[in-house]
Every structure is written in structure tokens, then in C-alpha cells.
Amino acid sequence: MGAVLTVWRVSSGTDWRGHSLRTLLLALLGLGLVLGAPAGGQSCPATVVPLVQGLSNPRGLALGPDGALYLAEVGTPETGGRVSRLWPDGRWEVLLSGLPFFTHWTGETVGTTALALRRGDLYLLQGEGPGPLASALLRLPAGARTPEKVADLFAFFFAERYDPVTALQTNPTASPTVESNPFALLSDEATDQFFVVDSAANALVAVSPEGSITRLAVWPDNPVPTGLVRGPDGALLIALFSPFPFAPGSGRVDRLAPDGRLRPALTGLTMPIGLAVDRQGRLIVLEFAQGFQVASGFHPRSGRLLRLEGALRTVLADHLPYPTAVLAAPDGTFYLSLNGAFAPPGSGQVVRLIPCDRG
Image 1: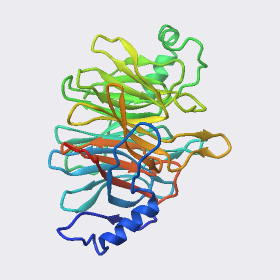
Image 2 (image 1 turned 60 degrees about the horizontal axis):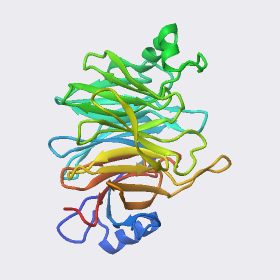
Image 3 (image 1 turned 90 degrees about the vertical axis):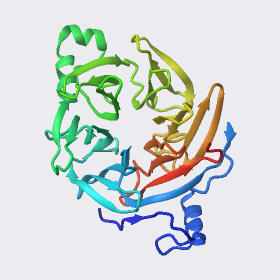
């Protein structure tokens, strides 16, 4: 990866793979990860434990039934992307490497963006780019070293765009340009299918294990869907990053009810990029940044992790450097991917966040 990979884990004493606890705290301070009281909302400062460092554009996370953490990296032009696994005892292994990598004209790096587990197989969501694996849902069977394509999202949207009836239904004012950049993936046991949000197509689709695709929702106002989770009431919740130029407070979460009705559920967010539900059924929202300027880009170290409970918004963490994924663990903690975009190669990391009031 062009950087030294460091795996951090807690031992019985104060030693962290050769580093004292004091050294670790100083390092966290340098990274801006010792979290104080944020501005706005109720504060619940969290403890952040680094798990893996030296990553390049880390994105999607998945937790196996055995406690192993799977993570995807978009990577670099030289290395491509990769998928790795971190075992609870600290063992680290690379499952896939050399996955397709693409740099968008905006400067965003695109590749493997999301992961999911289903019946022992690992599923990968590949973003836009050239090549046969781009804009696709891939499957890595247990024990295999080569992924196989399950569904081609670009082909689906291409066929939809050039079907005159479907095109008028989905976006009657759009140009004939076809775009597809899948970003979030949900393996849904209740319906035995996958749900995928595509940030470029501004659509939510369902994908069967055999690869058939069904469109569930489309947003003609280009809000850039990025996050996806099933709520405790059975509805699908979708994070909408917001249209360019990403004005503060213009992001939202939409709710797709089981009967197909799509409505805004939560407004006033700033660049929501990931969603989760904690073990008490509360919605967790990950915000990528708190501002954007055309000349300088996204505000650095301004990401936040929010917990929503009715009208109460609790800031669990702020000053996060370009967070790209959040995963809720059964023990009430969260895993985060940091420096997952617009960051130098090797600066990415995955951390474990422990809320101050974890029940």
C-alpha cells in the first residue's frame, strides 16, 4: 500500500503493541481524536480506539458472526483496492488485492465502497470506473480468491435510460448520459435480497442473490444518496448527502416504507454519508464534513457522528477526518473508517468508538 500498516489492539496492561498508553493518547491528540464537547446539540464525548492505520481510502465495513471485522479500501492507482479481515485476536489478513481503482474528475477516488456478508460469502460493491467489474455487486465465495460478478448496475441503468417509457418515469429532464456509482450496500435477511444506493444514478435498487435488479426509488433533484440502513420499524432509511454545493443543513434522511411510500424522515443534516442503528434502536448518522468551498474543497477534520432519539440529537464524536463509513457493533460500540476520501495515501484508519453512555 506504500505505507506501514499498524494494527492496534488493547492488551491486559497499558502496552499497545510497543506503545505506552501515554504515547497513544498523545498520538490521538495529534490526530484530533480525543473528543471534547462539540458545538451544537447535546454532547456525549466518546473514547476512540485506533484499530488499523496506514490505510488508503478506507470505506465499507462489515462484521462477521465470529467477530472478525472486514474492511474495504479504494486504495491507490499503484496498488488498486483491497479487502482485508481483522480477527478479534489482532490477526490481520488480506483477502483480495488489486481491485479496480478510478479517480473521478472531481478528485474523488472510487473503487470498492461497501461490504456485506451472506451465508458465509462476502459481497463487495464496486464503484464506477472502467473495466468489467465497475459499478457492480461482486461475490467472493468462502475460501475463494477471485470475486465473481452478481449484478451489473451500470448495465441496468443504461437499459433503463434508453427505454423511452422508463426514462420518462425516472427523470424526464435528464440528459441521455448514463452514470452509476454504487455506494452503500445492505444485505437484508428479512427479504433475502440486497439493497443498493447509487450516488450517481440517484437511485435505490433491490438486487436478488441471482443478480436481478429492481428499482425501488429515484431522486430527480440529485441529492446524492450515500447511506442505507433498515430501521427498527422495518422501513429503509436512506442518507442523502445533498446536491452540489453541499450547503450546511441541506442533507437529509428519507424513509421508504414497506408499502413503497418515500418521504423525508430527518432534515437539517450536513453531508450525511453513513447510517446505522444502535442496539437500542436509535438512528446513528455519520456526517462527512461541515462545509465545502469550491476553491478549497471539503472542510478537513469536521466530520461528526450523531445519535438521534426523537427530537434529541447527541453528538457522539466530532472533528473526525473525512469519515466514510460507520458500523454498529452488538456491544454498543461503533467502527468508523476515517480519512476515507480526499486524503493522502496511507493516512486512512479504522477506529472503534465507545460512547460515553454505552448501556
